[in-house]
Length: 182
View 1 (cartoon, rainbow, N blue to C red):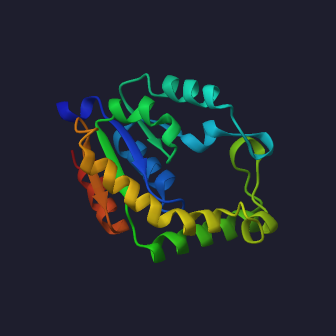
View 2 (cartoon, one colour):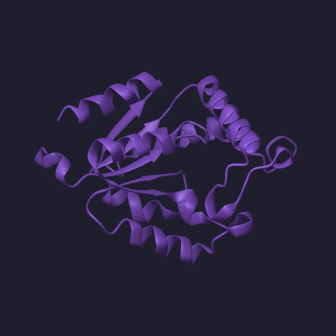
View 3 (cartoon, one colour):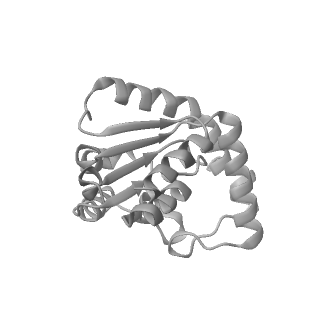
């Protein structure tokens, strides 16, 4: 393994539905990293959010190692992750790509009754008829997330990390393929 990849710590961000966890899982397979899905730390049984202090502590503990990938958009834990990151991967796909992904993921999850974090499951009601719908959340936060990550990148605050911004799933896959060849 190349020295610059020996201590690889990657944060994967992007609007809900972009494919952060799928990308992180592919990166784990390519680089043998420890993966933590921030939703897993944030959501408890019954879709109850973890207390902030507990979430921050659990995230800091997960980020204590030298080889990891974390996926999620939680600004409350940014200070535990981003200063230690060697790479920040921004899945900045178009709204059509993101929304079609989150729509099909949600339909599949509801139809198959797929258990998520701590036994939680999505329902037709929560997915399509609730103000807390992941579909609505993804749509409403799309532009805000693009602006936020563009500003964070431009700020230079996390200049120690290599920023990788992918505009298409094909770009992300090409980068992953390049890692597999190392």
